[in-house]
Image 1 (tube, rainbow, N blue to C red):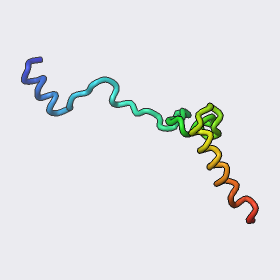
Image 2 (cartoon, helix red, strand yellow):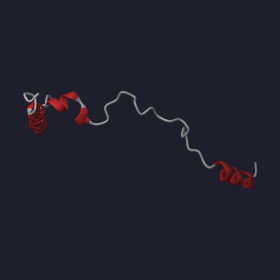
Image 3 (cartoon, one colour):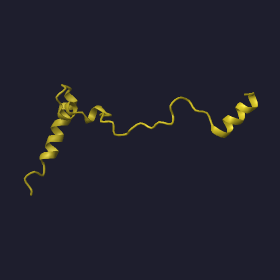
Image 4 (cartoon, rainbow, N blue to C red):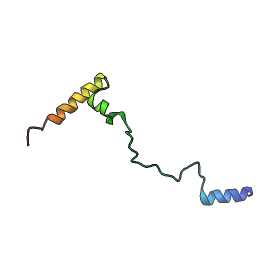
Length: 68
């Protein structure tokens, strides 16, 4: 192919870098952030901040337990 043919092909089809046509599955079972992992939610990993947040979450969850 000549340079003009290459240029024309790029204009018509665009440029592809790698595997752009394959889409990744959005539900691959992985946890994206540490905040959603069980150890961080429960404060079990030892961070004082996480333990404090876990305490507040527990208080919030228990707030309306008796009112049914």
